[in-house]
Amino acid sequence: MTVTPARPADLATVAKEAYVYLFPIVLMDITRKVTTNVPAGVKPGFGPVNRFTHMRAFPPGDFKEVIRPNFDTLYSVVWCDVRREPLIISVPDTAGRYYMLPLLDMWTDVFAVIGSRTTGTGVGRYALVGPGWDGDLPAGVDRIEAPTAFAWIIGRTQTNGPADYPTVHAIQDGFTATPLSAWPGEAPAIEVTNDPGIDMATAPLAQLEAMSGAAYLAYGAELLQAHPPHLVDQPILARLARLGFRPGAPFDPAAVTPEVLAAIDAAPAAAQAQMTSAEPRLTPLVNGWAYPTYGIGVYGSDYLRRAVIARIGLGANLAADAVYPVVYADGSGQRPSGDHDYVLHFDADALPPAGAFWSVTMYDGVGYTVPNALERYAIGDRDPLRFNADGSLDLYLQHEDPGEERRPNWLPAPRGPIGVTMRLYDPKPEALDGSWAPPPLTRA
Figure 1: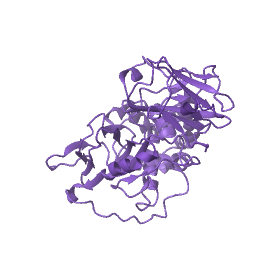
Figure 2: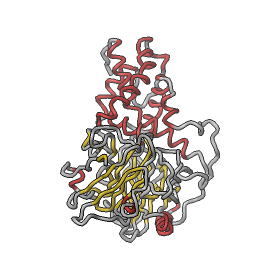
Figure 3: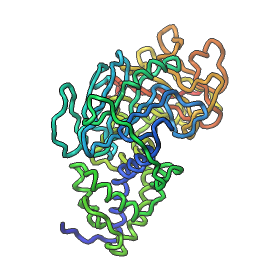
């Protein structure tokens, strides 16, 4: 390939583009290494490849491992390795209950969804087939092509409070992953020998952001040898050739000029600053809510959006399966605070349009839950809410108990800055096409 020499300013831009482009696949791979470096049953969400691990309960109020945990579904997670053979994903009959198993490739694109919205709630068998595999599948098993040799399933099953756990656990136990060679029997036991070379103490994102530019680019080149770029990536890859970066080949920092190496080493700080500043602009506010209904789950060549979403919420699903409006400002344009009382009012004909269910969850300003006396961290249509005489609904988001009459509709808030997230599962068309929007959070 003939590459036009670039000026230093051009090199800085291209190096930043390289960082943004590679961000999701590098973060996914670090996450894969960390979360599969633990034997089964030791830590929820962690375990060997090709074996589901389940979260069996909602997190406690003082949970701090991830931000914005949900209190609507229990998770079932598996990293799939289909380099050698297909993996058969089995799902049980959920008796009409909402669930979804989105499958993400190493670039964080959702390339398939098994679940109530897409494949229904009956028994299903799906063969996840890796790139280049050519063979026959058993009868009654549907084929799903994986764009990359590793894939990540972050499954969610509707959970109607702790009393519902036994029913959900039975459904979770019906999610299985079986290598084709073991089908239709049980998957063989998988032993995990802890790799001491994997940093288990530092969060994957922190590990990524601590890398030098040259080490980061070398890691990305290594990953592209195993996981091919998407077909739409030719333009960006042509630009990255100016840095000596070519898909299918290792990246050697010693083989580039000092000018190129300087641009590469400056790229992490510049790209991280770009992602931070771009985050609030990528999703316009509607009534104070950041309401992402497009550009989520599948990104095409919108590499900045893809990187930002991976950075703030790795594993995002398709908006058609669930949308998560987040409050950034109250009705007066101010950042919400638990030092004030708020009302979230829904007109009778403007309740959240969810085909499955909806909820509103309370966090502090960082995104963590804060313990409260009711141990209530979310409220929604599966709770015994009290509606107004005209069919409208008022939710009370405040620190102090609003009294017996309003208590069923009370979502306790901590003092200081608060974060509020609404979740609509299986959103109806009006939730996606802009004809409905969350109402403003109004100070009482």
